[in-house]
Image (cartoon, rainbow, N blue to C red; front, side, top):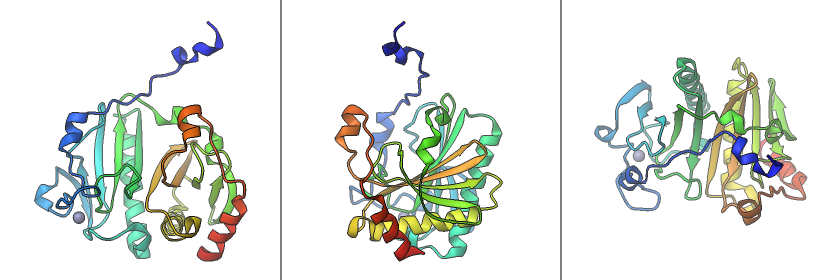
Length: 262
Ligand SMILES: [Zn+2]
């Protein structure tokens, strides 16, 4: 076998997307429709509630071979993570991570993802603030990770938690990383870094802010890694050729972020 046949050896991590379920899925970002997370009788099976935070089964599980849940962050449809009070922010991130870890510990899944889409370019379809926890029966996202994806130039660190700007991103251009131990001693500090980063992305990034972002949590090597990614159309040099890019002057962004947020 020659080295170009590598794809035969690689594990199959291609997820199957159900477009029949997707067609029925409400979309109130791109269409004028009532909010499916405000109409509580419209909610699918409630798994747990924690004050105004609700964990439900996803009514439209578009990913096959997976158990999909939605974490509704608050009963305020117009709220946004960067504006939460500190107590609500800590409560939300602690509860989300607890439910994520519980799904991992159940042992039913090869891996469990925890993430958030926000804004029209994030891949999300519902405006109401929510995150998702998805257990995959057959695939392990950790097989796709490299330690370099989370390395970067430090923006801030405190209480054993680091916030950095990727120097070797998964895709590019801008990926913010937050790294903490999985004993969760730094969880509130990490929540604060998430909030500051999201606020910076929405209001100040690139001089005028960016409408969309994703938040991804990874549990790997006894750490929690959190990626916060402003979203634009993916660069064609990555789509077509796999080239990842970073800005040539990262310190301009880092200094701007530090000046406004710390
Ligand atoms: Zn709503």
